[in-house]
Length: 244
Ligand SMILES: [Zn+2]
Image 1 (tube, helix red, strand yellow):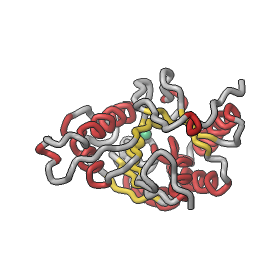
Image 2 (tube, rainbow, N blue to C red; image 1 turned 90 degrees about the horizontal axis):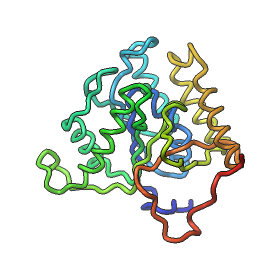
Image 3 (cartoon, helix red, strand yellow; image 1 turned 120 degrees about the vertical axis):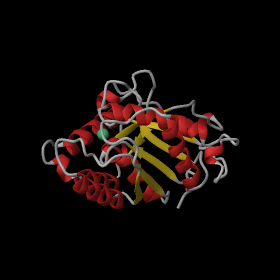
Image 4 (cartoon, rainbow, N blue to C red; image 1 turned 30 degrees about the vertical axis):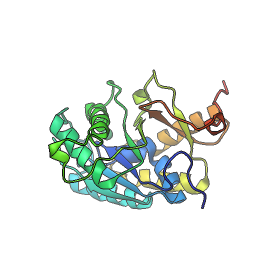
């Protein structure tokens, strides 16, 4: 197995979701790709989706566990303010920072902070950004039980097209491999209470095909870096997507 460039070899990935299906719909293909390469992945889901129109919290908890297993990820639920009630609080950012220190990821994924989407998504993105910062500060008394941790990169994912930040050029992750597409599709369909009403899985696959077409590949998922990307040389920068 080849080491993954630009990060500690197979260092863990940590993904935050506001609702039980956000990670799968927003970036499930990226998770499948990374875990199939051998990178450990852990999900932190910050509600049971109890404010949704479909599915009970119990169903949605079970669906999230099934989907995470399909993607090769471990999962925990974190109780904050509840679905539809998430607030920006320092105490929440510290809780997320404590998880970052416990799991010690290289890569953190969180929903984008674009305002015109479910408010929990944007606020969780903001909290995750704050948490990544707090996780590295040595003097924080609330976090003193675990040593500071510096992540390599925070990427935002967009649960819907509307949540894609217009001011950050995306990094496109190739998720074209059939085993990646099939795991991603199965993980989205595991959220049966949600996909029963609209074909959300097909909507996400169509979005990935459009990004793929722009890049000359079958399927791609956009991630939006919170910080400038650092490369050792121009040889690592890949190529640009410019097909239109
Ligand atoms: Zn959501």
